[in-house]
Amino acid sequence: MKAGAARALRWTRVNLFSTPLNAALTLFIAYLAVRLLPGTVGWAVLRASLTAADDRACAASGGACWAFILDWSRFILFGRFPYAQQWRPAIVLVIFAALLLASFSRLLPGRWLALAWAGGLGAVALLMWGGVLGMPYVDTALWNGLPLTLILAAGGLGISFPLALLLALGRRSSLPAVRTLSIVYIEGARGVPFIAWLFLMLVLLPLFLPPGVAIAKLWRAEIAFALFIAAYLAEVVRGGLQAIPRGQYEAADALGLGYLHKTALVILPQALAVTIPAQVNTFIGAFKDTALISIVGLFDLLQDTNTALNDPAWRMAYVEGYVFVGAVYFVFCYSMSLYSRRLERRLGRERR
Amino acid sequence: MIELRRVNKWFGGRQVLKDVSLTVARGERVVVCGPSGAGKSTMIRCINRLEEHQQGEIFVDGIELTGDVKQIEAIRREVGMVFQHFNLFPHLTVLDNLTLAPIWVRRMPRREAEDLAMLYLERVRIPEQAGKYPSQLSGGEQQRVAIARALCMKPQIMLFDEPTSALDPEMIKEVLDVMVELAQSGMTMICVTHEMGFAREVADLMVFMDQGEVIETAPPDRFFTAPRNERTRLFLGRILRQ
Image (cartoon, rainbow over all chains, first blue to last red; front, top):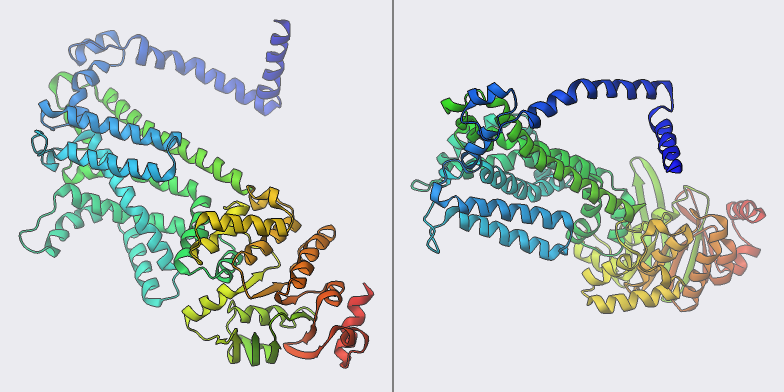
C-alpha cells in the first residue's frame, strides 16, 4: 500500500509538476475541470430527461432533452424511408459497422477484406433499393439519414481513391497531354467551391446525357463529391510520390520492371504509406462535407435532424439534436483517425 | 557480350562521355577506375539505359540499345545492377525484395522464386535474414541482399556501381568476398570501384577513365606495374598510397 502511494506521488511529481510551467498548466486544467465538469455532467446526465413529452417538460428539469432524440430517432437515422421497411436501412447500418470493424481489426487478410467490402456494398444496394425478394422498391430520393451519409462517403471515397492515383501519376507523367489534362482537372476541381460543383453537376450532367436517360439526384451528387475529393487526394498522393528517392525508380528499372509493375509494386506502396496522415485528413474532411449535399435537397443525417426539429413539441431541443449529430460524426471521424494511427505504426515498424 | 562504340553523352552543355569505346567478352571481368567525375558511373548506367547516350552505339548481348522500350526491358532483364546506395525496397522484406522481379517480370511461380531467393541468400551468406526488412540490416548485409536480388533474375551480366563506397570499412570485405566468388563462377562483370586489391584479384581487364574519356585499357598486371599514360600513373600513385 505504502509503495503504491509513493509511486503515485512520484508519478504525479514527474508528470504533473515537473516544471513551474507544467505545474501552472496542471492547476489551470484542474480549475477548468472543477468549473465546467459539474455543469456539463449535470446537464448531460444527472438532470437529463429520457422520457419527457416535449421540450417544455425538459426545461423544467433543466437538463438535456435526450427524449427528443429517442422520440425522433427513427426519423433522424432513416428519414422518409418507408416506415414499415426501416429494418432495411437498419441492417445497412449493421453491415457498415461490421465492415468498418472488420477493417479495423485486421481479422481478415487483404484479399478477403476487399471481397467483404464488395459483397457488403452489394448487400447495401440490394437492401436499399429492394424490388426483389419481396422487398418493395424504394426510390433513392427516400434514402435518407445516416445510411445516405455512409453511402455517400463510402461511394465517394471508393471512387475518388483510384481516380486520385491516376491523377497523381498523370500529373508526373512524361507525356505532355496526360500531364496537362491532370493539372487542368486538379486545379479546376480545387479552385471552385464544392457547393458550386454540386449545383453544376445537378444541372449540367443531364445536359450531357442522351434524352430519356436520367441519373438520380443522389448519384449526381455522389459523382460530384467523388470528383471533387479526387483532386485533393491526388495532390496528397503526389506529395508522397515526390518523397520517393530516385534510387527506387532506378532499382526497379534495373530489374526490368515495366511502368505498371514499378508503379504498383514499388513506388505507390511507399508513396501511400508516407502520406497516410494527409490522406486521412482529406478523408475526414470529405466525410463531413457529405453534410453539404442537403443543399441540393438530399436528406442526410444533419438534414433529417433539422427536419425533426420542426416538430413544434421539440423546437427548443436543437442543442441536443446537434450534439447527437456531432457525436455520430465524431465516432466515424475518430475511428478513421485511430485506424490511420494503427496503420502508420504497422508500416512504421516495417520501415524503421 | 557488351560493346560500346564511340559513345558520347552530354549533361546540358557539359560532355560527360567522350568517344567511349569498350568491348567486354562473355565471362570477362572488367574493373573501371578513375577520379570522381570521370564518367565511370555514367558509362555503366548507359549499358542498362538508366542514362541515355546521345551518340554512338551500345550493343548488349547482340541487341542494340535504342529508344525502344521493349528492347530496353529485354536488356534490363539480362543485366543485373548493384548500386552504391543499395536501393533495396524498404517496404518489402528481404525475401520479397528478391522474389519481386522473378515473379512479376519472369512470371516465375512464387514457390520457385522463393526457393531461388533462398539459394542466393545462402550464397551471399545471410539466409537467416530473409524475413527482415532492409532497415533492420547493416550496410554490408543490405548490399549483399542487393547483389542477391540482382542475381535472382539470372542475369548474363552484372554491373557494379561503386558497391563498397557507401560502406563502413569493416563491411567492405564481406561484400567483396561475395563479388570475388561471383567472379570466380564465371559471371560477366563490369565493376566501377576503387578497391584495387579486388581488381588485382579478379579483373581480366582494367579500364582507366578521366574526364569522360577512356585513357587506358590494360590487363591488371601491366596496368598496375607499367601504366602507359601519365594520368593513369598519377591516379594510381594517389590511390595506392592510401
